[in-house]
Image (cartoon, rainbow, N blue to C red; front, side, top):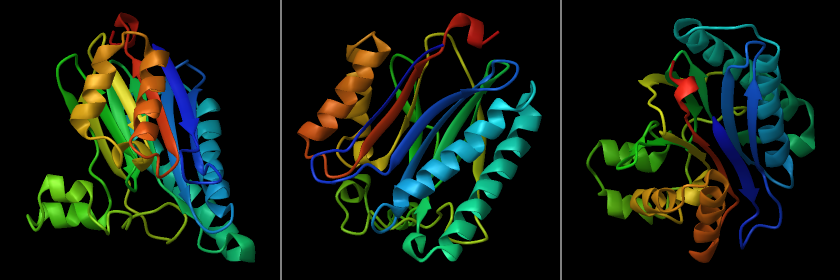
Length: 247
């Protein structure tokens, strides 16, 4: 697997509250992770770092797993990260109200296992189509689901920053998990809303298609989001699946 992980402050924000990482367990099975923190001062940065490394370091210490067991593992460890962030938020006044999204893909036995909370997204690109692997936990997504707005209206909706599920804000969170088949040369993308608020899915797919080098494609995504305004932190984890990853 060839992978690039990049994060950028953007054009408006003074600090970066996103975190990205690629982790490998004891059997060298990969877990791609991305978190987008939120909260006053630098509390969002604390939340995203806590969640990312709580899950990532637990993965590094875990043994070989399979597609069934990893689904439970992801849910349990994201819930555990939620508890840790929430406890810190309640203990320290300057961290009060902090939270973070999380999205991850574990690559196991020729399949991708996706887990997420919040509005950070996962996609796969098969050379022709950019396919969403997640559905935002957001107010705007709920409006879309009820056919109250169109996808084009959602792109610039004034309330699109309202997230309905967040790690570290409530004891009860819903971790969405799904499984999909991997094929060689498939591209996997994790991204924060700093990318998807600036670029449409068509834009993202065209940029990925235009550059065979994974790192250059990731850099091009960041640059395009900044050129479009860069209103938030912009983070991507972009990976190309190789033949050995699907066997």
